[in-house]
Image 1 (cartoon, rainbow, N blue to C red):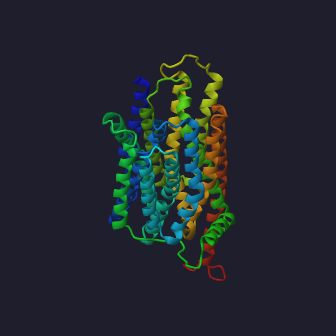
Image 2: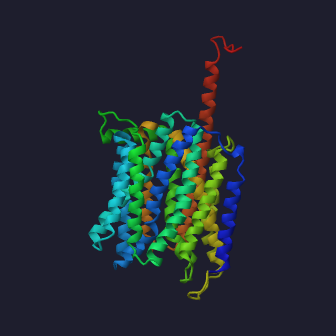
Image 3: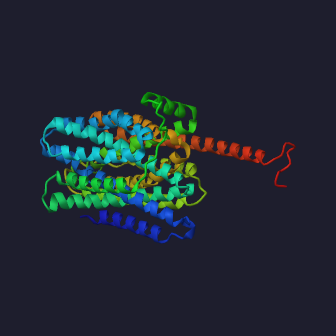
Length: 462
């Protein structure tokens, strides 16, 4: 392996270690024993759920190719997964508010385990069913667990600020450390032990089963709006009305869709971007480097969220702008650096620049997740939390399906330029959200001041 990769990985690992070890009491909240027990229980479950997801990721395409399917057929399978998440996942995820978030989390485990089981069949229709089940599970993963956490946190009377600790740790462990460990474990199963490309899916089923047992034995149920007189259509209308009535929620949904749409598109683009001439690059090691970058971002986010200033609405503008610049680098290097026509070999100079940019983008992803969770906990009403969060995923899934369908038709520079533009727009919308939030905060403070006055305008405490 070339020294460049080791230098990048080592530098990121050192930064993460320094940030984590140098935290002082000012960078941490003083919490209770009851909260720590609650937080640790959730982190164990969330880490197991993410392990079940990460184990599958690197081997889905490989498995389909192993069964002899071509790029077109594999592309249709991927589109089916995102389409399922948009259609069926939105409905199933929204039922969490009415039928219970714990029940939805258990449904996620069962659905994803069934999806893993379908991977044993080389039949295209069975694999398509697996993708549909996987799409439903994905919607539940990114809505039901967070909805349960926020509701349970508030029900138990914990400080609202302590939610930031759980969010940041969940991303650090679940989206960072577990991704790296899952990648290494999957590599051992497939390459070292020669158990075949289905082995990671079987391992994922085991982790999901363990997590489900913990949920069933330790979690209590909570709901959004369990009213029996509200059918699903009424629930959808109520969520849509809440989004339309509050500009903050509308902006939050647009920001999330723009960022996550760019993020999922990046997942399909980074490999051909770094090896346009079939350069020999260590895909697994680069993936681990990206996840380490995400851990760095979540570590930075935990520090930012532990302080009252800068507010999350403020610093996220910079994060979106930085991520926009990072994904613009492939366009810039394509214009300024002469392309190489040599097939194979090691990574090019422009590839090195892009890899550093991609690491910066992944660090922004690490900051994004706990920060967007924090904003969602503030602005989305509890009674329709899961429903609204799944509404946010509809434009995201539409965008990813369109991008996947046209990935061969559009030049890579156009795709990266489009993602960069979306992230720039997200930064502008974040600016608007900050302004509205400040106005709302100012009006709330004025109202509180008025309540503290007697009818003649004299302070009641004076």
